[in-house]
Length: 379
Image 1 (cartoon, rainbow, N blue to C red):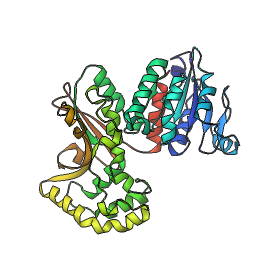
Image 2 (cartoon, rainbow, N blue to C red):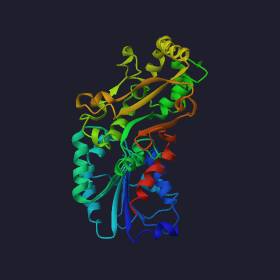
Image 3 (cartoon, rainbow, N blue to C red):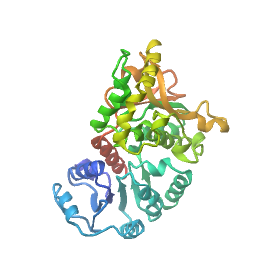
Image 4 (cartoon, helix red, strand yellow):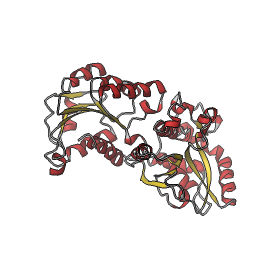
């Protein structure tokens, strides 16, 4: 694509860790970009094998999977990889680590790569939603080295959530509140369980079907406990100056109302969890009936309440997630379908009518698109 090639004379060397659903889709999308383009793949790394050629990997767009599978080379460690890639950091040649995993250890290594002048792009939430100390280390290291970290796909897959928030903050708008349905899984579950007409199948049935469709984690409690939404709220909060340090333990500091019945808290098997969940359908049905009686639906939402969180003691309480009821006329009731995400930005400039971002918030194709979009921002 000539317009892409003409943006910059720089060559961008790309090292990819993680070639699962999202990672494989990202590689396919990257290799499908029309030539000439500035990107050169120098590393592909799975959990077992690695392909590394600092001069650039050479294979067909259809052949990279078999080449990686045949490789007998193993990853020598993140410090070793960072040292090798750092030799490519020269004028007019950027180097990027693309982490497509959800791995804690990879996330913890970001400062190593940033210190070496290697940019980091990732949909991995762990580094940005965990302990504040790691997040601060990433910020500080990036500021010193000049290497950037971009993480649009950590919230909303390919939706422009983080970039929208950054634009609002950096242009001087005052964010009052962010609220939304941030989980594609929870969106699907509650769209089915609590439709606008007020009737729907049993909660356990919806969760079981969602699991069969692959919308939930293998253990549905990993979705129902709200931790994923808590991580996304943490990431957004840290881009808002008034709340940046309000969640020292990250998502663990978020006021989260889990939907996992206390009696099922310690069930380790996803199959056993699904088997025992019907015993609690009555209490979920009661919640739905109460909302329906008031002309409302239930949705699992996340809220970052900046306006009412100015008192330091209240900051953690103002970042919260859980099930809430909304009128049948509310966009959370009328606009959502399937596993959509919808996020509302209430700001001083968008006071009377909030800025709304909506669309598919999950899936390999849109998540990989968000990662590739971040990569394109470097040229």
